[in-house]
Length: 114
Length: 112
Image (cartoon, rainbow over all chains, first blue to last red; front, side):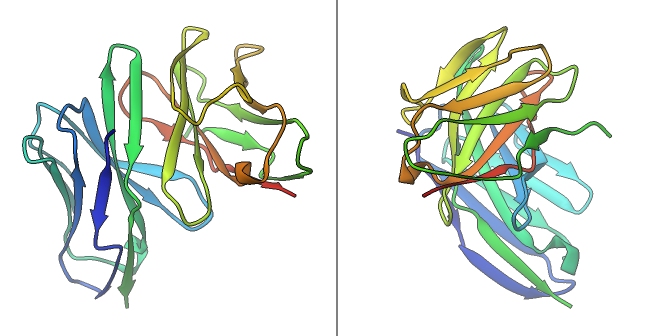
């Protein structure tokens, strides 16, 4: 069974720092990997999606990389801001066609201090 | 901007009672999902739904659970006989294709 692990579990940084969040998965046969943001008591917001054939995706200050063969992904946040404070989740999707299963990590709780 | 909505936001029920959680996906989306998140634990996939049928379900989604798209707009999750361990936040999500999913704000279910 696929296991998704995220480290660190929590991270506190001063505003302006660049930071890296890590995600690893045990089964490399994935369809895609997605990074989400979850604010307290709220749903998930998709940040970046990387297809299994891709190496990285960028959106603004966010850059996500994927090394499928080693079962790793990183989310890089440049010039962090207090508004970036949230829990960041990675999730992998497995399956073919319309048959898919999803596996989430337990998240990294980020606190960006002003 | 279109968004996924869920009702109710909170529900308290007695063990053994049936509950129905409701979701209104984004209107042109074709793929629908339910997830749950027990307090302090990972988000867990429950079920995916496409073309009016379940396309995949997890080990959690046993005979106590069912999903339905009764009227072309709502997407419901029914738990027939709730157990204490069903207490969780339940998230609905929808997608236009099999790629990015858009999540609703969740329903917090408490089983007493």
